[in-house]
Figure 1 (cartoon, helix red, strand yellow):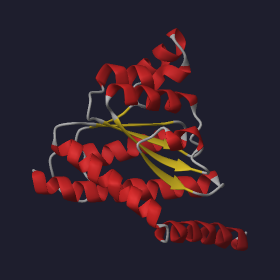
Figure 2 (cartoon, rainbow, N blue to C red):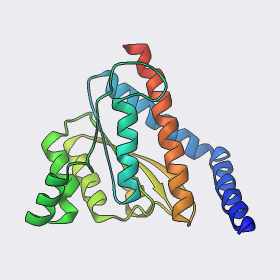
Figure 3 (cartoon, rainbow, N blue to C red):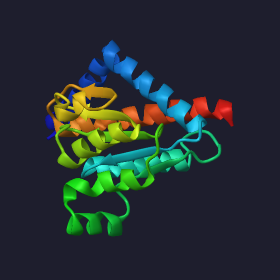
Figure 4 (tube, rainbow, N blue to C red):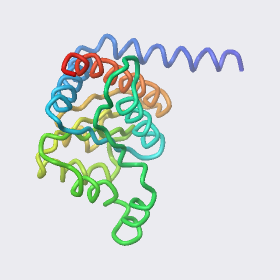
Length: 193
């Protein structure tokens, strides 16, 4: 068991080191930070969506934006599209589960808003559909994706790809990237408030 524990930790560290050495990933993270900070500064909002563990991450990152991460500041406009069970179950029941994010974005999304999609596979139909609809609505899309990025890789405006096959290790890195984005957006927006 001790060797298994150490092996899991080593795998996580190795993946984070590979991200640290990947200039493309670092560049895309910086691009996401710049876009989100600029949009929030201009009165736009951040919407976040994902399924399963990524739904939990959506709520986590939104809590950091609306509350705070490190800096006492005004709340930042962010909403997790994963939290309203009445809306999600009504849409799933009356339409289809693949529509749960599309209908919410159509209701509250405006041109210039940001949609952050979190997915370890990049192949969830509800995320693919909302990425496609967001383009029509003038909403900028960012994806924190795992494995090969799936179908979302070429649908989102800013893909941040964690090239790994282990879902747990991908999720650990997604949370790290989400915290980096929030921390640096918080610093950028602090300048504007």
